[in-house]
Length: 218
Ligand SMILES: *Cc1c(COP(=O)(O)O)cnc(C)c1O
Image (cartoon, rainbow, N blue to C red; front, side, top):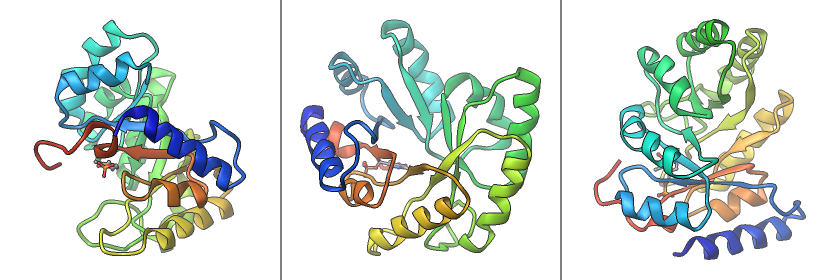
């Protein structure tokens, strides 16, 4: 689906939810997509992208940043602590802060470098054992610890279980954010971003609906 169609659907969803036009940030998830598809979306003027692997982002975004002005790339996948410094170089935001060790590493490097990407804390709203993220019961304490370390926490992120109604997970994420005074909500993907917008998403992560099916799974 062309980018313009996605933008139209976002605008409609914003209006239907009585939200200000432009209040939702579209993160175009470019993981494993061929470069020419990414270049096409850049050429249409889009500047905000998401990647889920540090290595893959390192291989493609420095060149795109040289060719196009104002690019922003957000890390939406898991981050190993030993790649944190590299992540600082590559990403304007990290959506996958999911454990104390990573939070402490980010705080230390932020101190050393005098800057820090925007951060989202990933919540495992479905309490899935194989999935990253802080459990809902641990969320308040973890958020407080991150804020106590002066980390620039913008909000929360979730990836609902594939076989469950996503709105329940979006609503839960929104509740946890609200009671902790956080306004950012990174939620909603190709199949459910309109639902996410209705429930307050500020950042939607849309891949296949923009770029087409991914050639390999990731
Ligand atoms: C791949 C990915 C997306 C985008 O998924 P689509 O269904 O292609 O829109 C969103 N969020 C995360 C964390 C992802 O890994």
